[in-house]
Length: 104
Image (cartoon, rainbow, N blue to C red; front, side, top):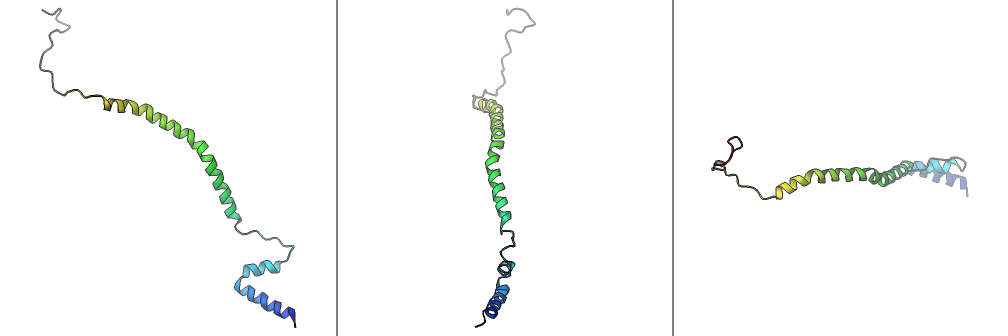
């Protein structure tokens, strides 16, 4: 039986169904091909660095913004909680005014 003819037929069939695998198999052991999905590895590494680094950078800024909101917002909240004064005008004239001297 001729093994070369069978192997060639299998190689041609493989080239039709999976050309990438056929190219890798025919390249031989000395040829180095770029590993697949190498870009995905870099995206994962950079994503992990960003996920670890962002809280250290954003944390102090968020803490400062929250402190400013509390410092500016407290007087407004306290003034909102104080009891309101009646909005009626005072009909009685003052009994003493500074320009007239002593009260009679």
